[in-house]
Image (cartoon, rainbow, N blue to C red; front, side, top):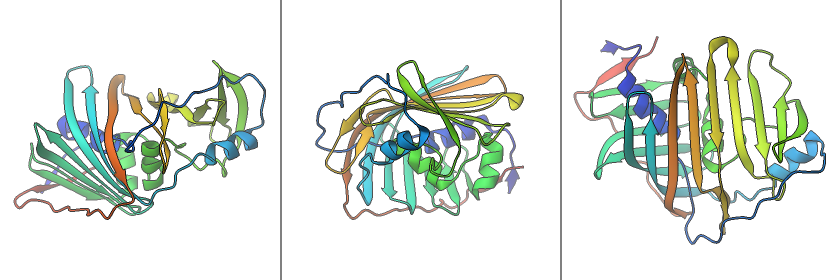
Length: 264
């Protein structure tokens, strides 16, 4: 067994594993969005956002992913299998070969990558500490389907208009700043940000466009920017195809001979 604290290659693939995304089949035109001009209360913005259609039980998605940091730029393909509210399986491929897999459930995270013959099994508290931002299953799933990280019905938010978008700013935590931005037509999320200035950490996820499908309204692209310890990582995810509400399997097993990673 090996104890690894700063394995950059493994961290890159894990970030890809969490920040990969979703699109539907039989797409229609891109949804027309509206500019926010009229003041609106936080409760109304929240209720309108949660009225956005998300009616599916399973999803099988294919995506192209571009990863950039200060030292490298990589392109991979990925597919995501989602059983809503229960589990997510991500497979990362290079030239058609699976190089990493992650199985995510509400209780735990399992992951392996072939380049270093290593695997990880642990809960979200361990992973959140290591990545520098609080994570749980619901937040990961929400990000993938274009909803706010947090349950907005449970928080206290100040509403305003900024750059033509409705903005909700969290008022409950002085150490962590959270902001959520919505367009004014169907209150689709356009951007969400989490930052801890004292720790020099920031996570921003942008959603340039959305499309309307029979089962869901979903983003067509995710742009994820993460800042930690003055180092910036950017992940641009383009959705290619998907099917919904079919019977799908979630095959996951760690190959023989892999070493388990423990995170301090």
